[in-house]
Image (cartoon, rainbow, N blue to C red; front, side, top):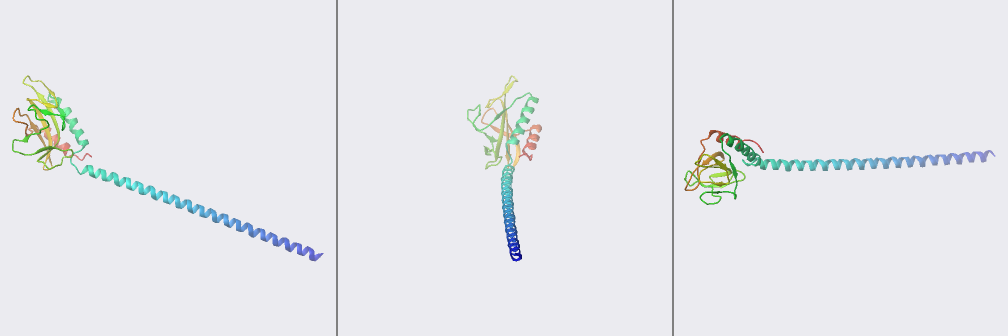
Length: 211
């Protein structure tokens, strides 16, 4: 009887130990699985963060390139708006109103469309430029016209009349120069304006750091 009880106890102890080992192994596997999942999640987050940083860097680089391209040219739309605002305020102070001209939308009284003319008749070359740069003596970025009359009144017009005051804003050898033409025959002949207000404001706008 004693042997039977002892055998039973021994068998029970063995089963208990076996169950404990099985539970420990299961817990170890669960912990290992959780650790692997956590590592995968951390790796995915790191990869996502790296990808986001790379995308932001590319966007920043593209933006910097666009700013550099804009800054490398002396003329841009922001400066055009500054000049427009100046002419719209300065003209009325002179009891005049000026129409902004652009390639293709104006003609002078001689009937030649879009001909800019010459500088004091010396044969210098003129041409429109959207950037302020070019292969001409005068790279014209803007023109404004006011048609006057012998009676003293006048109006803004893109058709340059026989009696007119027309300003051309240009870059000559990289420097801003404001020209004026009031010629009544023989084509548009330009000379540097003697109006100090126009010249100084044009120099200020053309030389500004606005992008």
